[in-house]
Image (cartoon, rainbow, N blue to C red; front, side):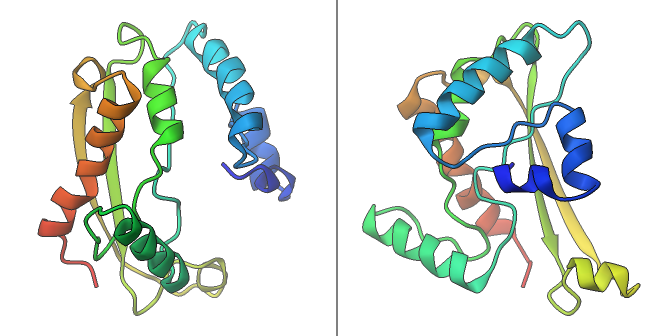
Length: 168
């Protein structure tokens, strides 16, 4: 999660106490944080979940245009309903997980109605929205551990979903 969110009252503070990783979005700083926190998580005696957002958490027009430009500059498929995933953190995490402790990777794609977007303002005003969720499960052991292989594996995800997506 973005480092600044840890300072948000209630939500950020609660996430601090629940071992959320806060990242600066600077690989030189974030790699050390990932090393330390992944080691700690893998030593937990109880099951853990690790959530990653390689495409970001919000889809906006500006982010979509930047993603489209990024895809075109690298000869990647231009996606209609998703941002191009940034693979460095995903690949690093995958290469440092123990498949005996973390068995599955879930791809969870959430699409919300555009008529009433799920913003904090709409929630506080009591406006309802609807969403569609698409979930797939993959064995961690089946995902390539090398940077290139795991990056390619992740990059193929939205292309498949893009073909079946009906979100506006």
